[in-house]
Image (cartoon, rainbow over all chains, first blue to last red):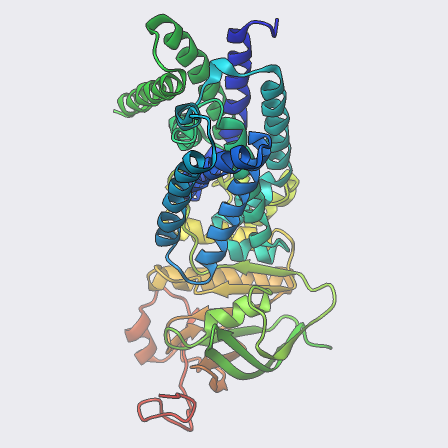
Length: 263
Length: 245
């Protein structure tokens, strides 16, 4: 079954959608959309490093995304404006990655594949890595779900309950790095943030509790992955952007429907 | 009886700025202490230090072993993107048995709010839900940071009466920060006035029967409010020794 590239693509899309959903909800609740984007931008630096050092792409991406996320958190704590810190680091990392990849490697590397993803070229090893990453993300999020929610609402309430809100944010940072690493092959670094935010935002009008919002986001993300892949086959369009288009369409339908229902 | 919590020569800083210094106070079981002071006087910082959110720069905080603290923060903004029912909010970070949840909501005067969305609550309802949350663990010490902010005078009076009832049923001590320098909760055993340090302390003047009181508060507040007369030995209008300018 896994011999079929389309089946592998579908499974990869579902894995990424499931991992992105719970994290995406927190990205929306904590208003860290730009943080997610910056971390994703750092991934291209990881790709360049992997090519230069001749190592596997996914661990290199994971390491740079993690380093990026931690650096940004530290700068923000030292009193730099979060916006400024992100703006400087994200685009520097992207530019250095792009320049480095061309300077240090002979092969004309297909950067487009990393910018926009190439889900149809996902191999068995990629698929295994994606699902291991997704499993890890879901396990981490399930474990820290309630503490993270409380820390998101109010850090002092979390402290009064004996939690360390900084440590909880660190969990979120780690999860974000993992999601970036597993999603880069599927939708590419330029569209990772959209896969985090759009399904969560689409789920909001339908949800009464945070848990249901995460579940619905997972459903919507999965639906978008399937519909986007199918659409890409029918219309012969690039897969990553097609998946994001499908997600945007679902968002528009749900938000519009909810607005009409409230009338 | 040993105090629930005691501070000795406490100094609190944000970065290099000292927000509070030389605070030595103790709170006995069942006592209601009101802390008043202008904005930026370090009141909230003191509460945050008591829950362990800020570490003292100097001095120490001694908590009775096993002390259970219920904390009501000053501001709690819930982003509209986060769907959250009152019940789920009270069950963070640990789910609590339904009976205890209902008891806490009852004690806080919010028995019917369990299934409502947090974002749809009025200011007063929101405040009562926060109080219910603080009461869940049957605290020995209740810390309230400007709980009546945004409530009108009858609203504040009703809230103070609620706190007094809670104190009577639970027997917990209360430290309440108030932004109003002169009108405090009548049941306060002590009032501490703060402005970077403890300026003065005393008891509120209970003048509930005086005609001037009626003129000030109307009859709807049922004696829950009282005036606090400050007995400062120094003035903050003139340059003050602790303001390094």
